[in-house]
Amino acid sequence: MQDEVHEEEVTLKLNPEFEQAYNFEPMDVEFTYNRTTSRRCHFALEHVIHLGVKVLFPEEIILQSPQVTVNWNNVQDTKRDGQPTSKNWKSTKDQSKHAAKERQAGAQDALGLAAFARKPGNLVNEAQIPKAREKEFFNPVLNENQKLAVRRILSGDCRPLPYILFGPPGTGKTVTIIEAVLQVHRALPDSRILVCAPSNSAADLVCLRLHESQVLRPGAMVRVNATCRFEEMIVDAIKAYCKDGEDIWKASRFRIIITTCSSAGLFYQIGVRVGHFTHVFVDEAGQASEPECLIPLGLVSDANGQIVLAGDPMQLGPVIKSRLAMAYGLNVSMLERLMSRPVYMRDEDAFGACGAYNPLLVTKLVNNYRSHPALLALPSRLFYHRELEVCADPKVVTSLLGWEKLPKKGFPLIFHGVRGSEAREGRSPSWFNAAEAVQVMRYCCLLARGISSQVSASDIGVITPYRKQVEKIKILLRNVDLMDIKVGSVEEFQGQEYLVIIISTVRSNEDRFEDDRYFLGFLSNSKRFNVAITRPKALLIVLGNPHVLVKDPCFGALLEYSITNGVYTGCDLPPELQSLPDCG
Image 1 (cartoon, rainbow, N blue to C red):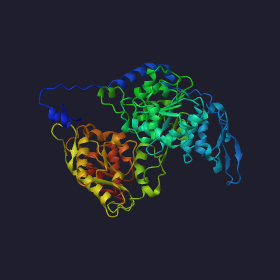
Image 2 (spheres, rainbow, N blue to C red):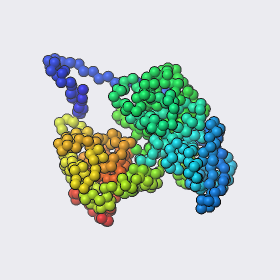
Image 3 (cartoon, one colour):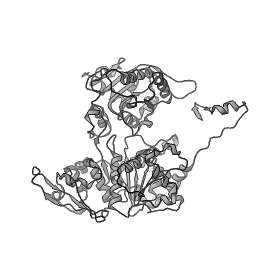
Image 4 (cartoon, rainbow, N blue to C red):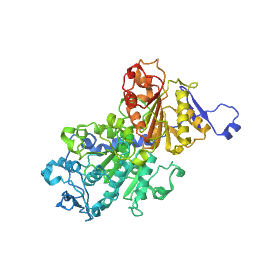
């Protein structure tokens, strides 16, 4: 059954067999809301009181003894250009010796352990460790910030205060979580690890990556699904882990359990209570509402348990439909709320040497492995204090710099001004813009069908904020046999990446500016803007009316960036932008 929502009515499309048998007699249609997640959220709110103010509303840091004892040994290696080498650490649990290189900024984070009254000289060593020692990490290509985060999680100096892994777009946040889970599993044999995410797709990805690591022995990991989940939605590689998760009693005895935040509530139903899990990881924590996030957190010890929240407060938060609930802050994730508290806040004066955050509580990943420098510069400036570093594969991100349709060769961005007209069909509340839809189709054809282009349809993503525009673009692409191009809302693209992203902004009525932000609707959300422009690897094309979009700070910045770099094309510009220098 499909439905179409109008302003005051809902149109239902039913099975053809039903339509043939239906004799137009009156029928009652009832919609039932599944209250399971809401009930679990309410239960978690009542149950999580045991964590107390110190965890939920932290104001101070109380250092704990490390879960894994680390010994820093200063050993000079004169064979490597006079650079000192050191940092052999040993787990008291498995007696395994490891070593790693660490840049000075990463090492200076240890100065946050001021209570251990050591001199900086004893802690800071810019080292080049021999390759033979790199077996410390299961993943040999982790960068320094990722390694730092894993060490911090493994040490757990501030538990049970949540440790935050701040992962901007394309910085390898989930990769870091995978490494941390594997390290905890190996170094702490008594650990019981719960890994959650707000969606099945995110939880499946964690399970798949742990499976692909080939580190875990059979019987170490289980994937717990909701009973209503269809088996055909699960990829083959993780079905074996799901089989063990069908019996929740049996699943509770595994050392690594992966599930959604909501389905973690199943463990309450069998009597699992406080302290059962030693470690709780929540990936994509920025997308979970706080009550939803508290469901798994209620199962960790308030004394010695460790909580790890991974996400990005600058990207889309939880989807909340109720305006009343939004007014009371339900649209603010626990991760975002914690990062606004003093102990978690950015402080360049106090922590400038270690990423501007207290390294005992927050690690910010800054190496971006996705986008071309020209595409990364603006979001890095607007949202991430210009700290994102370009680390993407040059062959990939430069692959379209010679495309003949670029206004400026070597600069993979196009802002195409379109003064079309926005419209709605019947009583549908959703907008569409025919002129932009046609232009989207043209760009798709040029990219996927061009003689000199090497872009496949599956490498292209089209983002537009309105469902009706999604429908119109899909119809046009179907007519030119390009159905493999994904078309969807910003929410459908979060966490994904494409070689090429085309954005259709739709809104084009220049006469209604009494309340600019309300009129712009979906476009006025800076988090939605951030997600949209950080999806592409090699090319970004934005279609929209500059006379409307200039009213929004984010799109206004994108317009200025496009004009000054000589990549604006299309309709005439509004007066406030005409004086900008064109460096094309």
